[in-house]
Length: 331
Image (cartoon, rainbow, N blue to C red; front, side):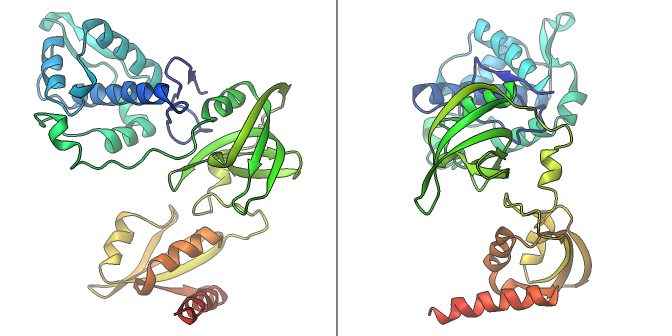
């Protein structure tokens, strides 16, 4: 079950079909939406981390000292609208305890802990509360850019909600243009880009399209049936990135990682199937994976340079070696 919140053009995060929240269309509305969204995150983060019960007046004082104070004040009506928006988006209730002069608290903290997306967003977007003014700090606190290509995001989400066909004017990276009829199944962010996954009639197969490559989009009233046996997360289960080729088998990959890169790999696994099978303190660690050998995986491994060595499969080791030699021959 998932919800779409048209008021804020935000996809609520109880869906297995959309991986992350995103803002609406470009222009002034985008700026307004992102500010509203950040205010939600700030309010939820502030109340959930409070060391003592907070009244509305306490919350306003903290707000005015926060990096987001440049957005304006926090009138009581706006505060209650934010409470309602947070409940609609995350399922988290900010309640008032009238026995303590109406202090606010998270009524259902277990929901917040169980909501993987809410937890992820709080980690990603919450900021320290002790900045005196945002104007002094915003050039020194650098946040990751939001994903590219959001102009048609709302239309795609609405078609997913209603299971209606999209007609897309699409331009591939090599420049070729084509018109495609798509049944949108799912969306995913990868490398700060949104991708739409679905069945494309002209290809008679499931493909992904980069949202930023949409030149134009037309919604229709033509219904399609979302496959009952299709699970987006399972679809991407054995790949790194977004490239899925059903003809590629799942293989046992083993790599050896050297030096400080060992700790990075332990903290940020290359894939969720990662398992450390051998290590020599201060020298190397060996990891195994169950993955498909996709182009994105190859790029990830090559990007690690001399800090990684492919051990198995032997033919993949040779493929990586050839790619390294080709690079060297260019210099």
